[in-house]
Length: 249
Image 1 (cartoon, rainbow, N blue to C red):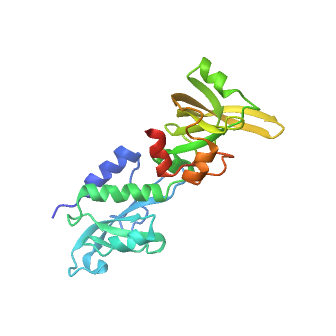
Image 2 (image 1 turned 60 degrees about the vertical axis):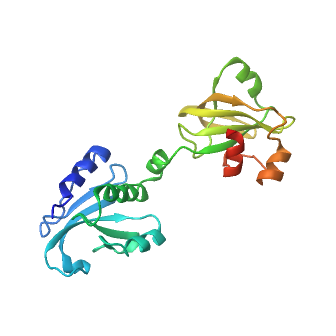
Image 3 (image 1 turned 120 degrees about the horizontal axis):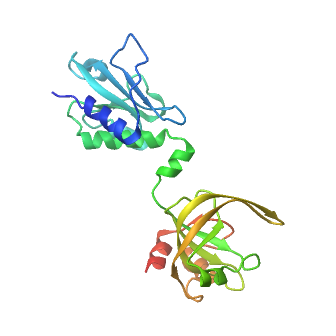
């Protein structure tokens, strides 16, 4: 049966610009793939005798070792055909996946992608995560955001930790308004900016584009607390799905 080894190598080169490293002269068929930034392994392709994996054959088979972020998921996978406990790397949720057809290539690439994310640096994980929705605060005492959005549809704002380009931010304007007034899309992050005055400190800015306005009586502080369990907006925070649906509608 044909191995997916070559196809997987091409996939890793095209998607992650990762090339195989052959580290052991004793095992010339073992190929390591690692991240460019933190140098951690995210895939290890090996050719091993089938009986080493619990198969009823001594024929050499190709496998790829990948790391699964969720231990419970890893336990489920190794009960399925073509999946095994990590060969030579059993710690840290590593599993082995057959490259000989018991598992389709689309699924193989899916678990390689999972391993890439599970072993990535914090910076890479942040860049790879799906777009997210946030509530961010705005204090009229420091900046008149209402006047700013009356002049421009896109403004620079203090960048919140964890926010990245493509995220959606819902701006909560503090007293005397005390309500969510704006839905914005983050169009740029990590804009250098140094500012410190009293309780306000900024190291970088993000650019946000106005998408929608809300009436001041729609998503008030009382409504956020009573209906959605949000009793304070002191910094960027995620939002429950129920509030997300209400804001979208």
